[in-house]
Image (cartoon, rainbow, N blue to C red):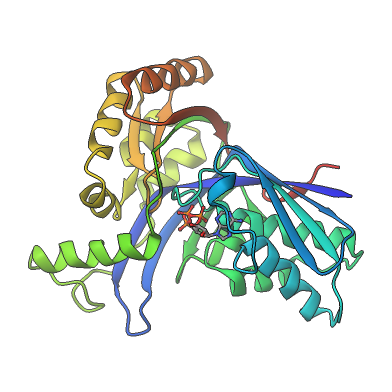
Amino acid sequence: MITVRVPAKVNVQLGVGGLRADGFHDLANVFFAVALGDEVTASPGEGVTLSCTGPDAAVVPLDDSNLAARAARLLAAHHGLADPGVHLHIAKAIPVAGGMAGGSADGAAALVACDALWQLDTPLPVLLDLAAELGSDVPFALLGGVALGRGRGEILEPLPVEGTFHWIFAVADGGLSTPAVYRECDRLRDRAGTGSGETDVTTPDADPTLLAALAEGDAVALAAALTNDLQPAAVSLRPALAATLRAGTEAGALGALVSGSGPTCAFLAKDAESAAAVAEALLASGTCRAAHATYGPVPGASVVS
Ligand code: ATP
């Protein structure tokens, strides 16, 4: 039996370019792995079967659309295993459809867990290629730490980072569909008259101030540099998020932003004590379903037992 721990991510910068002809957007995406994460346990089984526990377990699909199942099948096919046998249990702590790449995390964890269970010793570059086939956010869940993602987010460059940053995540009721948030982003750009196409929107690039704040371990500077081009779209689709963001800031967070495509909101605090206080105040404000204090960066998908 192999258990793999895998982090959720927050995008400390999410720069979204114009809509490409292939339907994707070019991104300048700074991923940051946090300790709030899932555990995926692989044990011998027949075919690929799944189970899931955790507060959001009821909304996790347990069929072949689950990224953990798809990862197991992809790894087996890559190695020509005709009859892969595995049961995958997902202990889910990452909010579902929350903008924290929980499904992608489980895909990465399943790759690592099945690789160990089946004793395949797949080299990391090959696992990263398989991860990119599964989805844009899956390679980062394998790597962890902090990384700049280009293209659709799947071309990764690890970034230097100093020390530990303290985060709070406010979980909303219900999720947001990532494609719907991108569509809303395009719609808002069109409505503003700037246009949403590749030639209308400047190709995004990593913000040097933000990269320096990470490298220097400066939480105040990082908080000031947090940006998410999808935030207006997420707030437009879920106006209640404005109150959540305000509640965390009023409770003493250094900075706040919507995590990825939302609706989870992320807050940066100056230390662990302040993070615990902000989490408590957020919960008391009634503007979120749950609030978790955590930290990062942490490593990507790793075998724990
Ligand atoms: P991202 O930030 O990568 O866009 P997200 O965090 O907003 O993703 P996920 O939690 O990854 O969203 O879930 C998006 C959808 O993917 C879910 O609604 C669910 O139907 C499907 N899904 C597939 N596999 C999983 C999984 N292992 N855990 C959760 N959802 C999954």
